[in-house]
Amino acid sequence: MRSLIDQFCPNIHDAPITAAAYDPWSGVQATADSNGVVAVQRNGESSPGLIFQPGAPIFGALALIRGGSLVAIGDEDGSVGVYSTADGSEYFREAREGGRGRVRAMRGVAISPDGSMLASISKDRLVRAWDLSRGERVNAWQDFSGETVGFDDRGERLLLIDLNGQPTLFDLLRVQRFPMTRLPMPASRAIFTLDGTLVLAAGPAGISLLRIADGAVVASFATQGGSGIMNLLISPDNQRCAVVTQRSVHQFSLPELQPVDSVKHGAPDPSGAAAWSHLGLRVGGADGLLHSGKGGSAGGVSLATGFGEHRLAVHHDRIAHWRGRARRVEINAGGPIADAQIDRDGRIIGVLPERGPIAVFDVDTGKKVFEAGAETSGATQLCVGGTVVAARMAQGGCRWWDLALNKGYELAWPSSIALSGGGTWLGVVTPKGAVRVLDPATGKDIMKPPTPGGSAAVRLLSFVNKRPDLLVFDAEGILSHYDLTEAGRGGPPAHPRDVLSVNVPVDRLWGIAGGERCALRLPEGATCTILFVDLRSSAVVAEHSGLHPAASVDPETGAVLQPARSAAVLELDMSGAEQAVLRALPGGEWISFGPRGVLAASPSAGTAI
Image 1 (cartoon, rainbow, N blue to C red):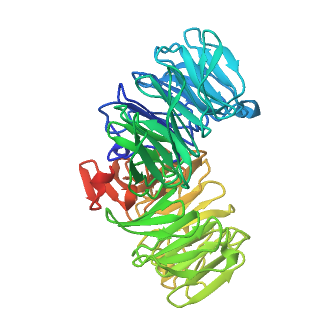
Image 2: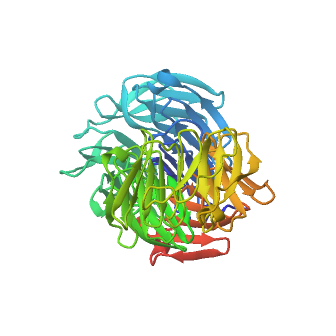
Image 3: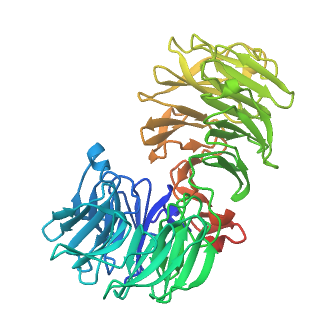
Protein backbone atom coordinates (compact mmCIF):
# COMPACT_ATOMS: atom_id res chain seq x y z
CA MET A 1 0.00 0.00 0.00
CA ARG A 2 1.30 3.46 -0.90
CA SER A 3 2.43 5.48 2.13
CA LEU A 4 0.51 8.61 3.04
CA ILE A 5 3.76 10.56 2.84
CA ASP A 6 3.84 10.03 -0.96
CA GLN A 7 0.59 11.92 -1.45
CA PHE A 8 0.19 15.65 -2.12
CA CYS A 9 3.96 15.84 -2.33
CA PRO A 10 5.64 18.58 -4.41
CA ASN A 11 9.00 16.80 -4.27
CA ILE A 12 10.96 14.31 -2.23
CA HIS A 13 14.18 16.10 -1.34
CA ASP A 14 14.93 17.22 2.20
CA ALA A 15 18.26 18.73 1.17
CA PRO A 16 19.16 21.40 -1.41
CA ILE A 17 18.54 20.36 -5.02
CA THR A 18 21.95 20.45 -6.68
CA ALA A 19 21.32 18.79 -10.07
CA ALA A 20 18.39 18.39 -12.46
CA ALA A 21 17.80 17.00 -15.94
CA TYR A 22 14.84 16.63 -18.31
CA ASP A 23 14.51 14.55 -21.48
CA PRO A 24 12.06 16.24 -23.88
CA TRP A 25 11.68 13.11 -26.02
CA SER A 26 10.27 10.96 -23.18
CA GLY A 27 9.14 13.46 -20.54
CA VAL A 28 11.39 11.85 -17.90
CA GLN A 29 12.77 14.20 -15.24
CA ALA A 30 15.54 13.52 -12.72
CA THR A 31 16.67 15.58 -9.74
CA ALA A 32 19.44 15.07 -7.17
CA ASP A 33 20.33 16.73 -3.88
CA SER A 34 23.33 17.45 -1.71
CA ASN A 35 22.76 14.21 0.21
CA GLY A 36 23.10 12.17 -2.99
CA VAL A 37 19.41 11.24 -3.21
CA VAL A 38 18.16 10.91 -6.80
CA ALA A 39 14.48 11.12 -7.80
CA VAL A 40 13.13 10.11 -11.20
CA GLN A 41 9.67 11.12 -12.35
CA ARG A 42 8.39 9.56 -15.58
CA ASN A 43 5.77 10.90 -17.94
CA GLY A 44 2.31 10.52 -16.38
CA GLU A 45 3.53 10.27 -12.77
CA SER A 46 2.26 12.90 -10.33
CA SER A 47 5.35 12.46 -8.12
CA PRO A 48 8.70 10.68 -8.50
CA GLY A 49 8.19 6.94 -8.92
CA LEU A 50 11.86 6.10 -8.30
CA ILE A 51 13.92 7.36 -5.37
CA PHE A 52 17.38 5.97 -4.68
CA GLN A 53 20.80 6.97 -3.34
CA PRO A 54 23.65 5.55 -5.44
CA GLY A 55 26.51 7.18 -3.55
CA ALA A 56 27.95 10.50 -2.38
CA PRO A 57 26.50 14.02 -2.81
CA ILE A 58 25.86 15.15 -6.38
CA PHE A 59 26.60 18.65 -7.68
CA GLY A 60 25.55 19.19 -11.28
CA ALA A 61 26.66 15.84 -12.69
CA LEU A 62 23.29 14.37 -13.73
CA ALA A 63 22.09 13.51 -17.26
CA LEU A 64 19.40 11.45 -18.99
CA ILE A 65 19.84 9.43 -22.15
CA ARG A 66 17.64 10.42 -25.09
CA GLY A 67 14.45 8.42 -24.52
CA GLY A 68 14.83 8.60 -20.72
CA SER A 69 15.59 4.94 -20.00
CA LEU A 70 18.95 5.59 -18.31
CA VAL A 71 20.30 8.26 -15.96
CA ALA A 72 24.02 9.04 -15.60
CA ILE A 73 25.33 10.28 -12.26
CA GLY A 74 28.69 11.62 -11.10
CA ASP A 75 29.30 12.39 -7.43
CA GLU A 76 31.64 14.27 -5.11
CA ASP A 77 33.70 11.13 -4.45
CA GLY A 78 34.59 10.96 -8.14
CA SER A 79 32.38 7.94 -8.81
CA VAL A 80 30.29 7.67 -11.97
CA GLY A 81 27.41 5.35 -12.75
CA VAL A 82 24.56 4.69 -15.14
CA TYR A 83 21.24 3.42 -13.78
CA SER A 84 17.85 2.34 -15.06
CA THR A 85 15.15 4.96 -14.56
CA ALA A 86 12.60 2.15 -14.23
CA ASP A 87 13.95 0.54 -11.06
CA GLY A 88 17.34 2.12 -10.25
CA SER A 89 19.28 -1.00 -11.18
CA GLU A 90 22.95 -0.45 -11.94
CA TYR A 91 23.95 -0.57 -15.59
CA PHE A 92 27.53 0.63 -15.10
CA ARG A 93 29.61 2.02 -12.24
CA GLU A 94 33.21 3.08 -11.67
CA ALA A 95 33.68 3.89 -8.00
CA ARG A 96 36.17 6.12 -6.25
CA GLU A 97 36.32 7.08 -2.60
CA GLY A 98 38.32 9.04 -0.07
CA GLY A 99 40.75 11.83 -0.93
CA ARG A 100 41.70 10.21 -4.22
CA GLY A 101 38.12 10.32 -5.38
CA ARG A 102 37.34 13.85 -4.24
CA VAL A 103 40.17 15.23 -6.39
CA ARG A 104 38.05 14.25 -9.39
CA ALA A 105 34.66 15.31 -8.02
CA MET A 106 32.29 15.23 -10.98
CA ARG A 107 30.78 18.42 -12.39
CA GLY A 108 29.06 17.19 -15.56
CA VAL A 109 28.14 13.89 -17.25
CA ALA A 110 26.54 12.83 -20.55
CA ILE A 111 25.38 9.62 -22.26
CA SER A 112 25.56 9.24 -26.04
CA PRO A 113 22.12 8.98 -27.73
CA ASP A 114 22.61 5.27 -28.49
CA GLY A 115 23.77 4.48 -24.94
CA SER A 116 27.18 3.21 -26.01
CA MET A 117 29.33 5.93 -24.42
CA LEU A 118 29.55 7.87 -21.15
CA ALA A 119 31.57 11.06 -20.69
CA SER A 120 32.33 13.31 -17.72
CA ILE A 121 34.07 16.55 -16.79
CA SER A 122 35.51 16.75 -13.28
CA LYS A 123 37.15 19.15 -10.88
CA ASP A 124 40.62 17.92 -11.89
CA ARG A 125 40.04 19.32 -15.43
CA LEU A 126 40.01 15.89 -17.05
CA VAL A 127 37.41 14.73 -19.56
CA ARG A 128 36.90 11.00 -19.24
CA ALA A 129 35.10 8.63 -21.61
CA TRP A 130 33.80 5.09 -21.08
CA ASP A 131 32.66 2.40 -23.52
CA LEU A 132 29.46 1.21 -21.82
CA SER A 133 29.18 -1.87 -24.05
CA ARG A 134 32.50 -3.11 -22.64
CA GLY A 135 32.07 -1.49 -19.24
CA GLU A 136 35.51 0.14 -19.26
CA ARG A 137 37.14 3.52 -19.61
CA VAL A 138 38.60 4.18 -23.05
CA ASN A 139 40.46 7.43 -22.52
CA ALA A 140 40.94 10.66 -20.61
CA TRP A 141 41.97 14.09 -21.87
CA GLN A 142 43.30 16.94 -19.78
CA ASP A 143 43.11 20.74 -19.85
CA PHE A 144 39.36 21.23 -20.01
CA SER A 145 37.14 23.30 -17.75
CA GLY A 146 33.51 24.23 -17.24
CA GLU A 147 30.58 22.33 -15.82
CA THR A 148 29.12 20.60 -18.88
CA VAL A 149 29.94 17.89 -21.40
CA GLY A 150 27.63 16.77 -24.22
CA PHE A 151 27.41 14.32 -27.13
CA ASP A 152 26.26 15.29 -30.61
CA ASP A 153 23.36 13.44 -32.31
CA ARG A 154 25.65 10.68 -33.60
CA GLY A 155 27.64 10.26 -30.40
CA GLU A 156 30.85 10.92 -32.35
CA ARG A 157 31.78 14.34 -30.97
CA LEU A 158 31.88 15.87 -27.51
CA LEU A 159 31.04 19.46 -26.76
CA LEU A 160 33.62 20.69 -24.24
CA ILE A 161 35.01 23.92 -22.79
CA ASP A 162 38.75 24.58 -22.75
CA LEU A 163 40.78 26.28 -20.03
CA ASN A 164 40.13 29.69 -21.63
CA GLY A 165 36.36 29.26 -21.42
CA GLN A 166 35.99 28.59 -25.15
CA PRO A 167 33.66 25.85 -26.51
CA THR A 168 35.35 23.07 -28.49
CA LEU A 169 34.09 20.11 -30.49
CA PHE A 170 36.20 17.03 -29.77
CA ASP A 171 36.11 14.23 -32.35
CA LEU A 172 36.26 10.89 -30.50
CA LEU A 173 37.25 8.87 -33.59
CA ARG A 174 40.06 11.17 -34.70
CA VAL A 175 40.93 12.23 -31.14
CA GLN A 176 41.08 15.80 -32.42
CA ARG A 177 39.76 19.18 -31.30
CA PHE A 178 37.80 21.46 -33.60
CA PRO A 179 37.86 24.92 -32.01
CA MET A 180 34.97 27.27 -32.62
CA THR A 181 35.09 31.03 -33.08
CA ARG A 182 36.44 32.74 -30.01
CA LEU A 183 33.65 34.01 -27.78
CA PRO A 184 33.54 37.61 -26.66
CA MET A 185 32.60 36.32 -23.17
CA PRO A 186 34.24 33.16 -21.70
CA ALA A 187 31.80 30.34 -20.96
CA SER A 188 31.42 27.79 -18.17
CA ARG A 189 28.49 25.91 -19.75
CA ALA A 190 27.77 24.80 -23.35
CA ILE A 191 24.91 22.74 -24.78
CA PHE A 192 23.64 21.62 -28.20
CA THR A 193 20.28 22.87 -29.41
CA LEU A 194 17.77 20.04 -29.74
CA ASP A 195 18.05 19.92 -33.53
CA GLY A 196 21.84 19.55 -33.26
CA THR A 197 22.70 22.49 -35.53
CA LEU A 198 23.73 25.13 -32.98
CA VAL A 199 25.65 25.44 -29.73
CA LEU A 200 24.68 27.68 -26.84
CA ALA A 201 27.44 28.80 -24.50
CA ALA A 202 27.08 30.88 -21.34
CA GLY A 203 29.31 32.26 -18.64
CA PRO A 204 28.97 34.77 -15.82
CA ALA A 205 28.99 37.70 -18.27
CA GLY A 206 26.61 36.57 -21.00
CA ILE A 207 25.35 34.06 -23.55
CA SER A 208 26.40 33.24 -27.13
CA LEU A 209 25.04 31.15 -30.01
CA LEU A 210 27.41 29.35 -32.42
CA ARG A 211 26.80 27.48 -35.66
CA ILE A 212 28.18 23.93 -35.72
CA ALA A 213 28.77 23.83 -39.49
CA ASP A 214 31.56 26.42 -39.40
CA GLY A 215 31.93 27.27 -35.69
CA ALA A 216 30.91 30.89 -36.24
CA VAL A 217 29.29 33.04 -33.57
CA VAL A 218 25.85 34.02 -34.87
CA ALA A 219 24.53 35.95 -31.85
CA SER A 220 25.58 37.12 -28.39
CA PHE A 221 23.94 38.84 -25.45
CA ALA A 222 25.94 40.38 -22.61
CA THR A 223 24.49 40.68 -19.14
CA GLN A 224 24.86 43.94 -17.29
CA GLY A 225 25.06 43.76 -13.54
CA GLY A 226 22.82 41.08 -12.07
CA SER A 227 23.89 38.09 -9.98
CA GLY A 228 25.72 36.05 -12.64
CA ILE A 229 24.61 33.14 -14.83
CA MET A 230 24.36 29.80 -13.01
CA ASN A 231 22.72 27.55 -15.62
CA LEU A 232 21.74 27.37 -19.28
CA LEU A 233 18.69 25.53 -20.65
CA ILE A 234 16.69 25.01 -23.86
CA SER A 235 12.91 24.75 -24.03
CA PRO A 236 11.41 21.36 -25.03
CA ASP A 237 10.17 22.86 -28.32
CA ASN A 238 13.64 24.26 -29.16
CA GLN A 239 12.17 27.74 -29.62
CA ARG A 240 13.72 29.40 -26.59
CA CYS A 241 16.72 29.24 -24.31
CA ALA A 242 17.09 30.55 -20.78
CA VAL A 243 19.74 31.43 -18.24
CA VAL A 244 19.28 31.04 -14.50
CA THR A 245 20.74 33.58 -12.09
CA GLN A 246 20.65 33.77 -8.31
CA ARG A 247 17.27 35.49 -8.38
CA SER A 248 15.75 35.24 -11.86
CA VAL A 249 15.21 33.31 -15.08
CA HIS A 250 15.83 35.20 -18.34
CA GLN A 251 14.45 33.74 -21.58
CA PHE A 252 15.68 34.41 -25.15
CA SER A 253 14.31 33.54 -28.57
CA LEU A 254 16.10 31.06 -30.84
CA PRO A 255 17.91 31.56 -33.12
CA GLU A 256 17.70 35.35 -32.75
CA LEU A 257 18.86 35.30 -29.10
CA GLN A 258 16.59 38.23 -28.25
CA PRO A 259 15.22 38.73 -24.71
CA VAL A 260 11.57 37.67 -24.44
CA ASP A 261 10.86 37.25 -20.71
CA SER A 262 12.38 37.67 -17.24
CA VAL A 263 10.81 36.40 -14.01
CA LYS A 264 11.83 35.84 -10.39
CA HIS A 265 12.11 32.09 -9.86
CA GLY A 266 11.60 32.21 -6.07
CA ALA A 267 14.07 29.42 -5.26
CA PRO A 268 15.88 30.07 -1.95
CA ASP A 269 19.69 29.88 -2.15
CA PRO A 270 19.73 28.11 -5.54
CA SER A 271 22.71 26.03 -6.67
CA GLY A 272 21.74 26.67 -10.29
CA ALA A 273 20.10 23.28 -10.80
CA ALA A 274 17.05 23.64 -13.06
CA ALA A 275 14.89 21.70 -15.50
CA TRP A 276 12.73 22.97 -18.39
CA SER A 277 9.92 20.51 -18.94
CA HIS A 278 6.69 20.75 -20.94
CA LEU A 279 5.15 22.20 -17.77
CA GLY A 280 7.65 25.05 -17.64
CA LEU A 281 11.05 25.98 -16.26
CA ARG A 282 11.66 25.32 -12.57
CA VAL A 283 14.69 26.04 -10.42
CA GLY A 284 15.90 23.92 -7.51
CA GLY A 285 16.17 25.55 -4.10
CA ALA A 286 17.86 24.90 -0.78
CA ASP A 287 14.45 23.78 0.54
CA GLY A 288 14.54 20.67 -1.66
CA LEU A 289 11.82 21.90 -4.02
CA LEU A 290 11.61 23.03 -7.64
CA HIS A 291 10.32 26.59 -8.01
CA SER A 292 8.69 28.51 -10.83
CA GLY A 293 7.99 31.86 -9.25
CA LYS A 294 6.52 31.26 -5.80
CA GLY A 295 8.43 31.62 -2.55
CA GLY A 296 10.23 28.77 -0.83
CA SER A 297 8.84 26.34 1.68
CA ALA A 298 9.83 26.15 5.32
CA GLY A 299 12.35 23.40 4.48
CA GLY A 300 12.77 19.91 5.86
CA VAL A 301 11.45 18.90 9.29
CA SER A 302 14.16 17.99 11.81
CA LEU A 303 11.95 17.50 14.87
CA ALA A 304 8.26 16.81 15.51
CA THR A 305 6.61 17.03 18.92
CA GLY A 306 3.11 17.57 20.22
CA PHE A 307 0.58 17.46 23.04
CA GLY A 308 -3.11 16.73 22.53
CA GLU A 309 -4.45 18.72 19.60
CA HIS A 310 -1.20 20.68 19.26
CA ARG A 311 1.71 19.73 16.98
CA LEU A 312 5.11 21.37 16.46
CA ALA A 313 7.16 20.93 13.29
CA VAL A 314 10.71 22.25 13.56
CA HIS A 315 12.11 23.46 10.22
CA HIS A 316 15.76 24.17 11.07
CA ASP A 317 15.35 27.63 12.67
CA ARG A 318 11.57 27.91 12.50
CA ILE A 319 8.68 26.27 14.33
CA ALA A 320 5.32 25.68 12.73
CA HIS A 321 2.48 25.32 15.22
CA TRP A 322 -0.45 23.16 14.08
CA ARG A 323 -3.71 23.01 16.00
CA GLY A 324 -5.91 20.13 15.00
CA ARG A 325 -5.06 19.71 11.34
CA ALA A 326 -4.49 23.38 10.50
CA ARG A 327 -1.27 25.35 10.69
CA ARG A 328 -1.71 28.48 12.79
CA VAL A 329 1.62 30.27 13.04
CA GLU A 330 5.27 29.95 12.03
CA ILE A 331 7.82 31.27 14.53
CA ASN A 332 11.37 32.25 13.64
CA ALA A 333 13.60 31.24 16.55
CA GLY A 334 16.62 33.07 15.14
CA GLY A 335 18.87 30.01 14.82
CA PRO A 336 18.95 26.20 14.55
CA ILE A 337 16.69 24.44 17.06
CA ALA A 338 17.68 21.39 19.12
CA ASP A 339 14.33 20.87 20.88
CA ALA A 340 10.91 22.49 21.18
CA GLN A 341 8.03 21.64 23.52
CA ILE A 342 4.49 23.02 23.88
CA ASP A 343 2.36 23.03 27.03
CA ARG A 344 -0.74 20.86 26.92
CA ASP A 345 -3.07 23.85 26.67
CA GLY A 346 -1.19 25.25 23.68
CA ARG A 347 -0.27 28.62 25.18
CA ILE A 348 3.54 28.67 25.20
CA ILE A 349 6.37 26.99 23.30
CA GLY A 350 9.73 26.40 24.94
CA VAL A 351 12.69 26.39 22.56
CA LEU A 352 16.13 24.92 23.18
CA PRO A 353 18.46 26.31 20.48
CA GLU A 354 21.51 24.47 19.23
CA ARG A 355 23.43 27.57 20.30
CA GLY A 356 22.22 30.24 22.65
CA PRO A 357 19.89 30.47 25.65
CA ILE A 358 16.48 28.84 26.11
CA ALA A 359 13.57 31.00 24.94
CA VAL A 360 9.78 30.92 25.32
CA PHE A 361 7.31 32.09 22.67
CA ASP A 362 3.63 32.98 22.91
CA VAL A 363 1.66 30.65 20.64
CA ASP A 364 -1.03 33.17 19.68
CA THR A 365 1.31 36.01 18.70
CA GLY A 366 4.50 34.13 17.85
CA LYS A 367 6.45 36.67 19.92
CA LYS A 368 9.24 35.84 22.34
CA VAL A 369 8.02 36.36 25.91
CA PHE A 370 11.01 35.07 27.88
CA GLU A 371 14.70 34.37 27.40
CA ALA A 372 16.78 32.52 29.98
CA GLY A 373 20.39 33.33 30.80
CA ALA A 374 23.42 32.47 28.70
CA GLU A 375 24.22 29.61 31.09
CA THR A 376 21.29 27.65 29.60
CA SER A 377 23.05 27.41 26.23
CA GLY A 378 23.69 23.75 25.45
CA ALA A 379 21.10 22.44 27.91
CA THR A 380 20.52 18.71 27.52
CA GLN A 381 16.82 18.47 28.40
CA LEU A 382 13.79 20.75 28.08
CA CYS A 383 10.38 20.38 29.75
CA VAL A 384 7.25 22.54 29.53
CA GLY A 385 4.16 22.21 31.73
CA GLY A 386 1.52 24.84 32.42
CA THR A 387 3.43 28.11 32.85
CA VAL A 388 6.61 26.33 33.99
CA VAL A 389 9.67 25.78 31.79
CA ALA A 390 12.49 23.56 33.10
CA ALA A 391 15.87 22.57 31.72
CA ARG A 392 18.72 20.26 32.65
CA MET A 393 22.02 22.09 32.30
CA ALA A 394 24.99 20.90 30.27
CA GLN A 395 27.25 21.43 33.29
CA GLY A 396 24.85 19.52 35.57
CA GLY A 397 21.86 20.39 37.69
CA CYS A 398 18.67 22.05 36.53
CA ARG A 399 16.91 25.40 36.33
CA TRP A 400 13.24 26.21 36.00
CA TRP A 401 11.09 29.29 35.65
CA ASP A 402 7.46 29.89 36.61
CA LEU A 403 6.43 32.51 34.07
CA ALA A 404 3.16 33.26 35.87
CA LEU A 405 4.98 34.08 39.12
CA ASN A 406 7.97 35.63 37.34
CA LYS A 407 10.33 33.50 39.42
CA GLY A 408 13.31 31.30 38.63
CA TYR A 409 14.94 28.49 40.58
CA GLU A 410 18.11 26.41 40.43
CA LEU A 411 19.32 23.08 41.83
CA ALA A 412 22.92 22.02 41.29
CA TRP A 413 22.47 18.26 41.61
CA PRO A 414 19.59 16.70 39.56
CA SER A 415 20.74 14.30 36.83
CA SER A 416 17.31 14.05 35.19
CA ILE A 417 14.02 15.95 35.40
CA ALA A 418 10.34 15.71 34.43
CA LEU A 419 7.37 18.08 34.62
CA SER A 420 3.75 17.08 35.00
CA GLY A 421 1.51 18.19 32.15
CA GLY A 422 -0.05 21.00 34.19
CA GLY A 423 3.28 22.10 35.64
CA THR A 424 2.24 21.40 39.24
CA TRP A 425 4.90 18.74 39.96
CA LEU A 426 8.61 18.66 39.14
CA GLY A 427 10.34 15.29 39.33
CA VAL A 428 14.11 15.25 39.89
CA VAL A 429 16.73 12.52 40.27
CA THR A 430 19.16 12.93 43.20
CA PRO A 431 22.94 12.34 43.00
CA LYS A 432 22.35 8.86 44.50
CA GLY A 433 19.80 8.04 41.80
CA ALA A 434 16.65 8.38 43.91
CA VAL A 435 13.56 10.40 43.00
CA ARG A 436 12.04 13.46 44.63
CA VAL A 437 8.88 15.34 43.65
CA LEU A 438 9.02 19.11 44.13
CA ASP A 439 6.62 22.03 44.01
CA PRO A 440 7.87 24.20 41.10
CA ALA A 441 6.49 27.31 42.82
CA THR A 442 8.73 26.86 45.87
CA GLY A 443 11.42 24.32 44.98
CA LYS A 444 10.49 22.27 48.08
CA ASP A 445 9.27 18.68 48.36
CA ILE A 446 5.55 18.52 47.64
CA MET A 447 5.33 15.00 49.07
CA LYS A 448 7.46 12.46 50.85
CA PRO A 449 10.12 11.12 48.44
CA PRO A 450 9.07 7.89 46.69
CA THR A 451 10.71 4.76 48.03
CA PRO A 452 13.59 3.54 45.79
CA GLY A 453 12.92 0.27 44.03
CA GLY A 454 16.50 -0.99 44.37
CA SER A 455 20.11 0.08 44.31
CA ALA A 456 20.19 1.01 40.63
CA ALA A 457 20.08 4.75 39.90
CA VAL A 458 17.06 6.16 38.10
CA ARG A 459 17.99 7.45 34.63
CA LEU A 460 14.65 8.61 33.19
CA LEU A 461 11.31 9.63 34.66
CA SER A 462 7.94 10.75 33.34
CA PHE A 463 4.62 11.74 34.87
CA VAL A 464 1.44 10.31 33.40
CA ASN A 465 -0.69 13.05 31.92
CA LYS A 466 -3.71 13.97 34.07
CA ARG A 467 -3.00 11.21 36.63
CA PRO A 468 -0.97 11.11 39.90
CA ASP A 469 1.35 8.47 38.43
CA LEU A 470 5.12 8.51 37.95
CA LEU A 471 7.16 6.20 35.74
CA VAL A 472 10.90 5.64 36.22
CA PHE A 473 13.53 3.75 34.24
CA ASP A 474 16.73 2.77 36.04
CA ALA A 475 20.32 1.93 35.09
CA GLU A 476 19.57 -1.81 35.15
CA GLY A 477 16.80 -1.42 32.55
CA ILE A 478 13.89 -1.80 34.95
CA LEU A 479 10.72 0.18 34.20
CA SER A 480 8.73 0.91 37.38
CA HIS A 481 5.45 2.63 38.24
CA TYR A 482 4.53 4.77 41.25
CA ASP A 483 0.98 5.66 42.29
CA LEU A 484 1.41 9.05 43.97
CA THR A 485 -2.24 9.48 45.03
CA GLU A 486 -1.80 9.02 48.79
CA ALA A 487 1.65 10.63 48.93
CA GLY A 488 0.24 13.68 47.18
CA ARG A 489 -2.35 14.03 49.93
CA GLY A 490 0.31 14.03 52.65
CA GLY A 491 0.28 10.27 53.16
CA PRO A 492 3.16 7.77 53.29
CA PRO A 493 5.80 7.54 50.53
CA ALA A 494 4.76 5.80 47.32
CA HIS A 495 6.26 2.36 46.64
CA PRO A 496 7.31 1.19 43.18
CA ARG A 497 5.83 -1.62 41.16
CA ASP A 498 8.20 -3.17 38.63
CA VAL A 499 6.60 -3.28 35.20
CA LEU A 500 9.17 -4.54 32.72
CA SER A 501 12.85 -5.29 32.24
CA VAL A 502 14.28 -3.78 29.03
CA ASN A 503 17.78 -4.97 28.22
CA VAL A 504 18.59 -2.34 25.56
CA PRO A 505 19.38 1.40 25.79
CA VAL A 506 16.41 3.73 26.24
CA ASP A 507 16.68 7.50 25.80
CA ARG A 508 13.08 8.74 26.20
CA LEU A 509 10.09 7.77 28.32
CA TRP A 510 6.49 8.98 28.03
CA GLY A 511 3.52 8.32 30.30
CA ILE A 512 0.27 8.39 28.31
CA ALA A 513 -3.02 9.86 29.52
CA GLY A 514 -5.31 7.27 31.08
CA GLY A 515 -2.52 5.51 32.92
CA GLU A 516 -2.83 2.27 30.97
CA ARG A 517 0.21 2.61 28.69
CA CYS A 518 3.60 4.21 28.38
CA ALA A 519 6.12 4.48 25.58
CA LEU A 520 9.90 4.04 25.46
CA ARG A 521 12.27 5.12 22.70
CA LEU A 522 15.20 2.89 21.81
CA PRO A 523 17.92 4.72 19.82
CA GLU A 524 19.41 2.69 16.96
CA GLY A 525 21.80 4.98 15.12
CA ALA A 526 20.06 6.47 12.08
CA THR A 527 16.67 5.15 13.27
CA CYS A 528 14.87 4.35 16.49
CA THR A 529 12.26 1.93 17.82
CA ILE A 530 9.34 2.91 20.03
CA LEU A 531 7.83 0.35 22.38
CA PHE A 532 4.34 0.69 23.86
CA VAL A 533 3.95 -1.06 27.21
CA ASP A 534 0.69 -2.03 28.91
CA LEU A 535 1.21 -0.98 32.53
CA ARG A 536 -1.43 -3.39 33.84
CA SER A 537 -0.27 -6.56 32.13
CA SER A 538 3.42 -5.54 32.13
CA ALA A 539 3.71 -6.51 28.47
CA VAL A 540 4.92 -4.85 25.28
CA VAL A 541 1.78 -4.42 23.19
CA ALA A 542 3.29 -2.66 20.17
CA GLU A 543 6.74 -2.20 18.67
CA HIS A 544 7.49 0.20 15.81
CA SER A 545 11.00 0.10 14.36
CA GLY A 546 12.77 2.00 11.60
CA LEU A 547 11.41 5.34 12.78
CA HIS A 548 13.16 8.69 12.45
CA PRO A 549 15.70 9.03 15.31
CA ALA A 550 13.85 12.15 16.54
CA ALA A 551 10.42 10.46 16.63
CA SER A 552 8.37 11.40 19.70
CA VAL A 553 5.11 10.42 21.42
CA ASP A 554 2.15 12.67 22.27
CA PRO A 555 1.50 12.14 26.03
CA GLU A 556 -2.21 12.84 25.54
CA THR A 557 -3.09 10.48 22.67
CA GLY A 558 -0.10 8.15 22.36
CA ALA A 559 0.36 9.18 18.72
CA VAL A 560 3.85 8.77 17.27
CA LEU A 561 5.11 11.91 15.56
CA GLN A 562 8.11 11.79 13.27
CA PRO A 563 9.78 14.05 10.69
CA ALA A 564 9.14 12.94 7.12
CA ARG A 565 10.44 13.97 3.73
CA SER A 566 9.21 16.97 1.83
CA ALA A 567 8.76 19.26 4.84
CA ALA A 568 6.24 17.02 6.60
CA VAL A 569 5.28 15.47 9.92
CA LEU A 570 3.90 11.92 9.79
CA GLU A 571 1.53 10.87 12.57
CA LEU A 572 0.97 7.20 13.48
CA ASP A 573 -1.39 5.78 16.06
CA MET A 574 -0.20 3.38 18.77
CA SER A 575 -0.78 0.41 16.48
CA GLY A 576 1.51 1.95 13.84
CA ALA A 577 -1.25 2.89 11.37
CA GLU A 578 -0.71 6.14 9.48
CA GLN A 579 -3.19 8.75 10.67
CA ALA A 580 -2.17 12.06 9.13
CA VAL A 581 0.52 14.05 7.35
CA LEU A 582 1.09 17.73 8.09
CA ARG A 583 3.07 19.27 5.23
CA ALA A 584 4.56 22.70 4.49
CA LEU A 585 4.32 23.77 0.84
CA PRO A 586 6.10 26.46 -1.21
CA GLY A 587 4.97 30.04 -0.89
CA GLY A 588 3.87 29.68 2.75
CA GLU A 589 1.06 27.27 1.85
CA TRP A 590 0.29 24.09 3.80
CA ILE A 591 -1.85 20.96 3.68
CA SER A 592 -2.85 18.11 6.01
CA PHE A 593 -4.29 14.83 4.85
CA GLY A 594 -5.14 11.35 6.05
CA PRO A 595 -6.14 7.96 4.62
CA ARG A 596 -9.43 9.41 3.30
CA GLY A 597 -7.94 12.50 1.71
CA VAL A 598 -7.36 16.16 2.52
CA LEU A 599 -8.18 17.20 6.09
CA ALA A 600 -7.38 20.92 5.81
CA ALA A 601 -5.36 23.19 3.54
CA SER A 602 -4.36 26.82 3.09
CA PRO A 603 -6.37 28.80 0.50
CA SER A 604 -3.83 28.42 -2.35
CA ALA A 605 -2.35 25.03 -1.45
CA GLY A 606 -3.54 23.52 -4.72
CA THR A 607 -1.29 25.77 -6.78
CA ALA A 608 1.78 24.70 -4.77
CA ILE A 609 1.31 20.94 -5.21
